[in-house]
Length: 570
Image 1 (cartoon, rainbow, N blue to C red):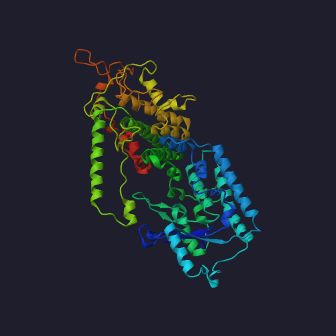
Image 2 (cartoon, helix red, strand yellow; image 1 turned 30 degrees about the horizontal axis):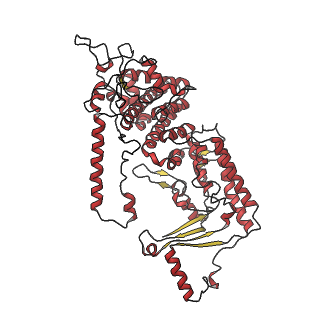
Image 3 (tube, helix red, strand yellow; image 1 turned 90 degrees about the horizontal axis):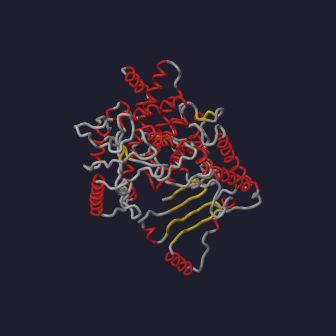
């Protein structure tokens, strides 16, 4: 297999790697790969670290919206990024690049040939050469098969390619306050980030579908559009940027172009490979919030637009409440608390893993690397650090009513939590669950910061006007009071608090008819009735109109029309 690396967005090959497949005769013989590459990269090399290195996410972190960045980090428990350090790193890379291309014109840089092989093959090669009298490795007539240019010319070309892109990237960042770029300019900044990283040397452009391909297919997802440098380089010999894609005056994409490019937060996904499920949930929610809030900002003040705004505000409120349901149940299954439903799910997953393993063991090993890559990824099994965790996903999370909780616990009765000392009614608990994150010193600790519903509401607040944001929160309060009737207890110290009687059991909260927290919401009054407890109310959030509306349906013209009709009917 031969892999060519384009040099400076040109058709020229700056590097070449030749390697055998994993189980080929060449690899078995001891030759891992052969490489040929230019040595002018040494003027940028600092202990094998190059300016704007491919594994350096500094530029992407500065471009991505601060809400997305913090949400993604919190979802996987990663260390926070210091934006001041990111700016310092970016500027330092720029200085290294400029010094490299402007202070090395008097030096000469050759091409290097490298063969990576096993010790056994190296010894065999040496024996063979000695038996031939140590002949020259290259005949005289084969030593000039390269283009030779003055170092000054090469450096000037590299500077003329890289610095305009870096300048453009900085100007795009300057179009808004730090971490507040609009979605379109975020996409443009990420595109420029990839161009800068691949502009000053030999680069494997093929691995960056966003800049190499015109259309990018990601599994079962819809096709996305890229910059299409492959066709441009093949036709013109250099990767010119298509002017029809950009609006140069506004530092943005041309109208209708940005929607075809992928969501910008993907550039940071590889940093968080350890927790793909958590990352996927967070990104999907933020994308939907961004799509809905973006549509709200476009609406005018006509009667129809005001009703459409109400539809989207109600949908956003339901989406955050639905995510709260999801976070509750996923958190309970991953927590150290035990219940019958969790035991049943654990046994089911272990049985499926055994069956899957037996199927693969029955098949012969294949040399086809594509088949190796397509082998399904196993579920994460409980680790020694947290042996009681079960990782269960929900397409439609269970309701937070007594009957639904009782069913999901597989027949166990929810254990009631007493009144508590601080959060005494439904309003106090709602403020803790959703709004306490906005307090300057909120004191939220274990498990709170990774909850997707909190980051979703934070994104809503950052993107909407205060009046629209308050409309979302007001609607959420009504939904919480109507449908969240049997909820797990929580404190600022712990997202899911244990029972006072058993540290291994979750505990649940109920309210009376006035919205006050009850000591014993499961008790009857002795006359066959109840004390107005929410645990004895029968409602279903699954039957609510907005619960079953997906984001694309809620934001398109037809979905808004149906939503307006629904609200008009009262």
